[in-house]
Length: 291
Image (tube, rainbow, N blue to C red):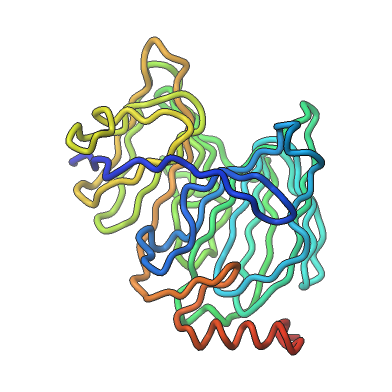
């Protein structure tokens, strides 16, 4: 087994979305589609008083993608055009397949400590499924398995680790999505099939991510808060935490690319300009939501 090395490090950019929500964005939808099948990764926190009142994400449309929201602190109230309404709290996951079209809103609420903290991942849908039936699912914290091994604590949202499978299983890309926390001086090794896209978002501490000094990444040292993008040059990733440090915590994301041309336009990701134009026309004439 050979370790994958780091291609480059992404420093998240601050962006404003929704009704004035400040986010750290590492990946955004682009026609270049360099992180296929992953389209977007946002790290959201509403904990700076300068941001003012929590505004959230009022009703907005999606088409052609799947979204996975993972909460660490606080909660988000959800409502959509399928008739779903609920709340995802600390440790919960919300998975939504927009398919041919869905309208939804996400309104955040502070937790007991006054914080709101979490991640949203957008995963592409293949062309054959972009106009499929929309679906929505909530997964409670208690349904997400926690696996402890050799100083690693893994919360498994999707994929498999050490014989355990995550509860989110019907995403078209069949991705790996896990929250990994390493104690000081711990080591984590995970096999990744050749050709799969691999990302690691470090949000606490720092770790050595089987790096390559030629990339300028400090021989693989990745510090919070940043996203490591891996080369396709090995069949596993290896992460080590500093014995003298506080450990490291990161989201590990991996999946096989669809290798399809995409045309992203705001909350829509389709395969042609004509499909985007059709989507906009349907929004204007009131036929976007199909019964």
